[in-house]
Length: 335
Image (tube, rainbow, N blue to C red; front, side, top):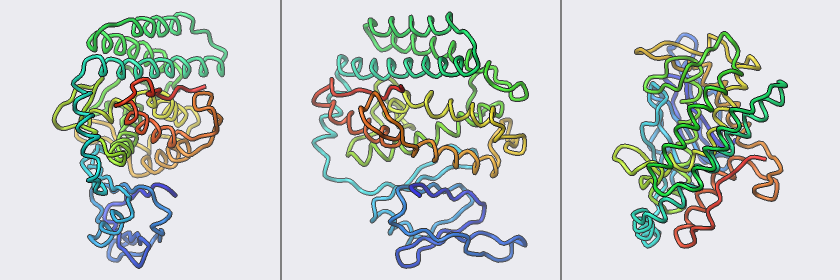
């Protein structure tokens, strides 16, 4: 159980010896009952939803065990977190700052991220078309042409333009595989305007949280972006590194949830002008997300059996190595 998600409103996380106790309100909401006990050594991360509580003793024990804690707001967006302290990577961070400001390094890394993302978008559509006996020559050809242009581009703005054009065409085609009762016109965030966008946004939030923690664990600064320009209020490097995983994990998983009828209208609720996952919807999504992240497969890219979670951690490690040797950075591409 690498991830514990505390989503129930009014839940409390307490420490008892080397175990976390999860207390939740009873049906009459007048008492708390212990719903789960989790040994600390079974955890790699914990996610706590706004409205739940966690004791300072539990927080301290989690941090001593190098377990990051992420906090999600009512709208499922990442609010902040607690990261185990890392104070022995000062020289690495100084070198990261220097390289981030080097245009050739920034373009080299950003280009490899975009090339991997476009390859994965194209592969996702190929698999969907093959499973449903559809032909997508124009769409696949367009994505390949955007990838060819990205290879030859000479600056970040040009690269972002090709990535954006590819994303628009990809989502237009991807949406045709959704069931008719869950339409998707376009990507919308802050707020998501429909159930499909709610799933994509929630999945991206989970992936983003994990990546922020992985970057911190490798002693780097997740705020210094390349493809996503460094800006206050976000972890731009984490946004960079999740890009190749979005088609493989977030969008592929969201599509499966709808086409296999694991999601229905009870999994969503309106709130302040948007559509968000309900508590039931979050539970369904997180369960399938965790299964997909930890499912082993033979990767042609890695050359051995691996998991998406391992590949995500490995990409953070690769980026650190690329600060000295940029050609060592090879973002994940699906088979």
